[in-house]
Length: 120
Image (cartoon, rainbow, N blue to C red):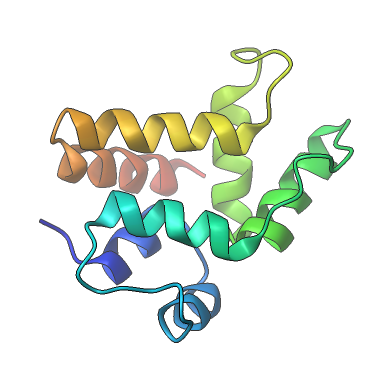
């Protein structure tokens, strides 16, 4: 199993966001990575009413609100382009993370995005 810090870096979260979350009251090292990921999203207090209409707004939202590095924001948006309707990219990213945890294939998930990272 991958530790939480490594997991968050592997999905593209900025180190400064991880550090702030780990030092917050919302972090409980006894939780599993999926629970910590949910706690992280709660910690960010994301507003589902944010008006996002364009590709650039979506990339900026993932960068500035969720804490993804720029190239990962672009990777997720480009990967999900045309896949979703009437839902935000962050909801799809959560679904991707959940599916890999439920299948017990977190290492494959990390390897997949490492390969994608090399392409960008």
